[in-house]
Length: 409
Image (cartoon, rainbow, N blue to C red):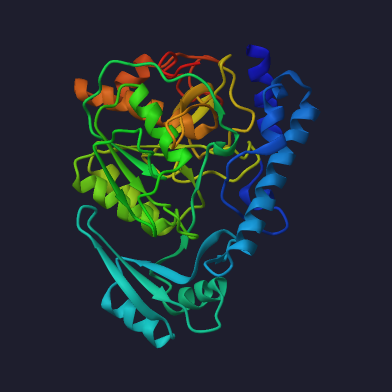
C-alpha cells in the first residue's frame, strides 16, 4: 500500500506544473468522465513503473482534450469555447450583481439583456447578456471586460459528471445504513424512477429526466443512509446542460428548500457566477461537497471542488489505493470509496461504478450524519477519518478516508 501511494505521489510530482503549462493544443478544458481503454487499464496502473504511470496520465489528458474538441464540434449550434478554451453556452455572457451603470455600459457596447435571475435564497442577481451578432464568445468577453473592467463577468460554462457512467456493469445492490435525517441536496442529472427522492426539480431543457449518473449518485446517498434527498437535474436533454447558471439556480432552490448539505458530482472551470453562488450557500452554513475529477494529476484544478469552503473529495479503490485518474483541487479534504463499489442506474439495475463522482455522495452522507449530531461537523468528520498514506493530511487522501464500509463492494 505505502509503495503504491509513494508511486502515485511521485507521478503527481512529475505533473505538478502551473495550469498554463497543462493546456493541450492551446485549449484549456474542464474535466470529463474517464471511459473506454483508458479506464480498462487503470486497475493495474499502480503496479507499474513511474514511466508507465506517466504514459497513462498523458493518455488521460489526450482523451480529455479529444472529448472537449468533439463536444465543441458536435454541439456548435449551442456551445462554443470561451476566452480560456472551455465550453460554454453559445452567444451569452453572465453579469453577477450588475449595477445600472454597468448594464448601461454593456448596452452601449452592443450587448442586449436576455433576462435577469433574482436568486432570493442566495442574495444574488445574475443578468444574461446576448452578444452582438457575429461576435464570438471569446471576443465578447474581451469587449465587455474593456467596457466594464470592474464588473463580475462570466461565460455560462458547462460542467460534466466526474464518474465513468458509460462503463457501468451489472452487480448487486448497495447495503443499507443507519438513517440520516439531514436534508441533502443533489445537483446532477435526474434520478431514475427507482430512486424515491423527497423532491426533484429540473433546471435545463427536458429536465427532470432520468440519467445513469444521477441515479447512481442518489443510490449511493441512500445506501449510505440519507433519507431526505432533494435532487436538482441541471442536464435534462439540453445540449448545453450542466451550465453555470443552471447550477446556480439549483443552489438557490436547494437553499430555499432546507437542504443543509449539497452533493455536486460535477467538474468544470472556474466561473465567477458559480463561485458567487457557492460562496452564498457556504455563508449560510451549508456544506458543499464536490470531486477532484478524473483527468489525472496533470489536469488544471477542478471546480467547484477548488472554491473556498467546498469539501474537496478524491476516491480510492477496493484496496484503498488512490485512483490513478483522480484529478486535483486547490485543496483536498477527504477520500472515500470510488471504485469496486456498486449502485443503481436509471433503470434500477445494480451497476459497478468507478470515478471520483461516486466518492462525493458518501462524504456528503457522512456530513449529513455529523450535522444531525450537532456541534462541529468538520471536527466529527476528522475524528471519523482513517489516516492512510503519510501521517497527517496529505495530497493523496486529504485528512483521511471516510465511509470505508458504507458502499457495497
